[in-house]
Structure formats: C-alpha cells, structure tokens
Length: 164
Image 1: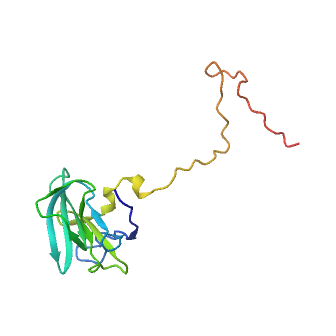
Image 2: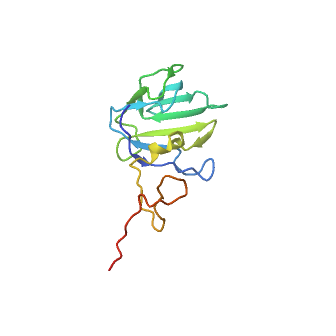
Image 3: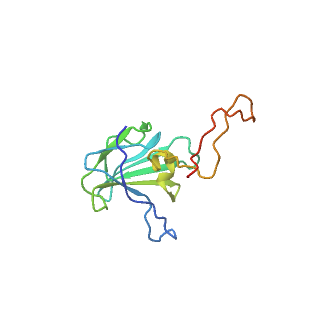
C-alpha cells in the first residue's frame, strides 16, 4: 500500500471558528509521491484553490453530512464525481504549494463546516506501531500445574535458590 509518512505537525484545533490553529495534519512526503484515499468515497473536488492542487473526498457511509477528507498540495489523478476505494491513489504530491518547511501533504477532515482530527480515521495499531512488550510481573506466584484443578501435585513446582 505504501509507506507510513511521518506526522510533521499534528492537529491543533482553534479555540474559536476564526482563531489560530492547525486544521489538519501535515504528513511528510517527497514531491511526486503518491497520495492515497484514506477510505472509500466520492471525489467532490479535484482542482486548484489559491494556486494549490486540492483533492476532496466525501467518505461513504459516514452519515449526513458525510465526513470529507482533503489533501493538498496534490496533482489530482481523479476527477470530481469519481468513486474511489480505500488506498486508491488520488494524486501525487506537488513540489510547490506546501506550507511546511519540507515538502508535505496537508490532510484535513471535516463534517460540514467543522474541522476534525484526521488521525481519528486511523486504527490505533497504525498510530502506535511497534512490537508488544511483555514486562515481568513481580510479586505474583507462578501458576499452579497439575492433574486436578486447584490441587497442587508438585508437578511443575520450582526450586528457588535460598540465597545462602
């Protein structure tokens, strides 16, 4: 499906409708990298806004009004009205038009006029990758083993050093 891009700047909701904040997430990406739809939906817009390429997708089955994702700056490879699937390439990252210090994709999520955190669309395992770590449990006796439930037959008993 592709690589997991780093989050360069997270979602910082404004205190008021017109207040300062960051109404999306900036994902690190190199110019020309594919941009994929996070979920299935219908392309609402694919074109230029204020000199930047923008793709907007209304997500299928997300209520009324539907959730809407936006991606910019993106050179669209889809057209308005087109159905897209989760993971489908909707365009490529443009070399210019990013508001990041490095090239990035600004990914937004809205319901109506309300901005939401786009990372909320991702499963927790994707947000917090890495191996599971089992830590030792101290002060808990080892489980009993034996042929009768609850009976300690001595099978599997452990000899602990006495420290002498």
